[in-house]
Amino acid sequence: MSPQDLRCSPHLTRAISPGDLAYACYLYESMSKYTKSLATFHRSTKSALDLLAPRHREHLIEFLNAWDGRLPKATHQEIVEGLRRWWADHEGAVTRLDRGGCSLHASDTDLMGLEKVFEALRDVPVPADKPGTRTRLGPTTASKALFALRPGLLLAWDTRIRERLKYDDSGASYVHYHRCARRQMRQLGDACERHGFTLAELPEKLGRPPYTTPEQLIVEYYWITLTRGVALPTKTQMEHWLDWSSTGMT
Image 1 (cartoon, rainbow, N blue to C red):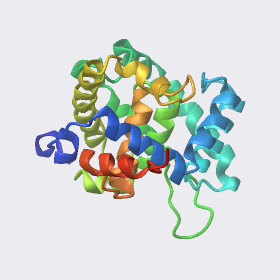
Image 2 (spheres, rainbow, N blue to C red):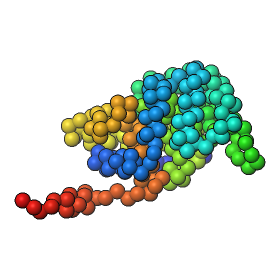
Image 3 (cartoon, rainbow, N blue to C red):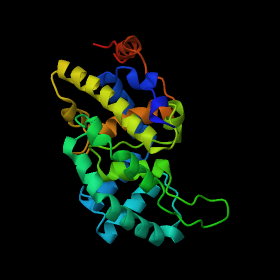
Image 4 (cartoon, rainbow, N blue to C red):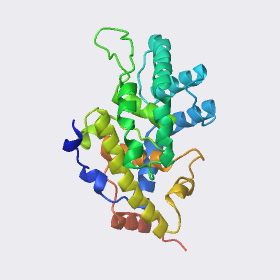
């Protein structure tokens, strides 16, 4: 898909309220196992993934499999070596992405190098353990690895998210996804400030661990609303339900 063909889906131009995000993230914790496996990963790496460390590369593969990576155990050593080569080739480009500090402040210039970084990781070889199985890391697993590497900057996606947002598995689509999400996160940040706190403070407001980033929360929102197709309740519905929570007893 060429950059000229890319447009922000209506789902990525719609304003997200802090309340909607909070509700979606609550559902995410309740409906999936992913927050537990993420906690395990952060304990294993002390929240500082180092792809120069062989054991950390193994921790990354364990995390990716916990997030539905389906990387056959017999291929792990080859994948570890592929990750090492990818990092040797692209560490500088990833480091340059850090200039923005977080996705909220990343400029289009900061994101320019992400296309090649993503595509090279997507194409890391995965030896087929049986006929008909995949032969590369793939776009979903690559995005999750980039999120693990830079959780305050890079976003995960999955096949359903790409389909719903009209993206393919190209680096151009992955970069465009970040540009649209960045705009949506800025709007969310403005809404948070109207409620007296910053976007950076939102994970703590939701009772999440210190390593949780707003980028993680926005992907949880996408997973609930796009991957799982959950329609969030309106404010009026929520108010009715809150009224029902009263027992009426004095």
